[in-house]
Amino acid sequence: MPEKFIQYRKKSLLFTVILFVCCTAIFFINDKPTDSMKSEDITPTLFVHGFKGGPGSFNTLLDRFDRNDWGTKGLTFHVTSSGNLQVTGSISNGKNPFIQIISK
Image (cartoon, rainbow, N blue to C red; front, side, top):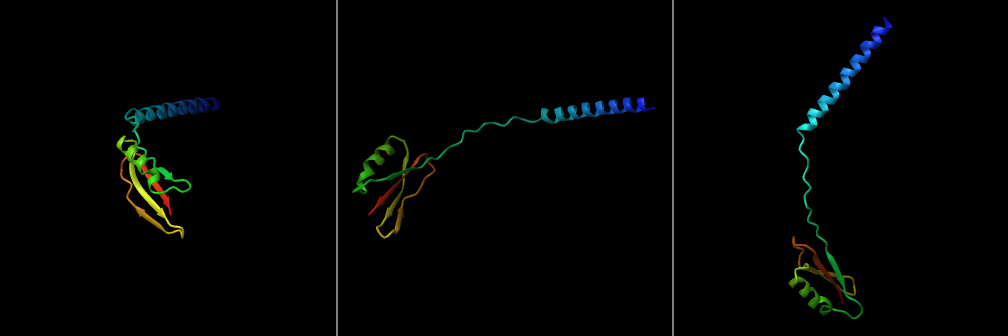
């Protein structure tokens, strides 16, 4: 009797494994592979002038970069000696916005 039980158990285990493999194969056969989409990275570049620099330190540089389509002139932060902040401009959806920090 125990021999028949062991054979029955082996057959049922084999049937279960085959059924599982078939169901898994059917499930994944209809699955479409995902497409790799190119991501559009926006990398802002921060320009901080050095000692005795001012608004003119980077204006011609940023204008030239903008003309060559290396990025777009975006935000300008004016920082006063008391720490107040005045922000002009905006960041567009274009690539590589330029952010200029001017301390007074």
